Image (tube, helix red, strand yellow):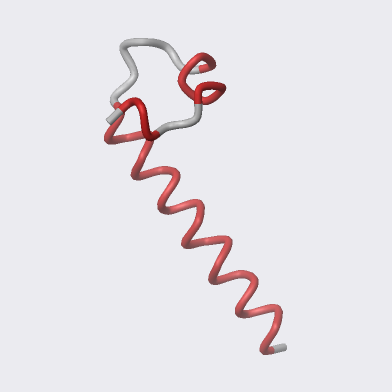
Length: 43
């Protein structure tokens, strides 16, 4: 699980941080970015 994350991301996070929370926030960030780019293209 940890091996799939970039090393720089892992090193900047506290060891006690929940990996699932990190992945969920990354996924939501990508979803927001995709939505905003689609919206700006359709305008």
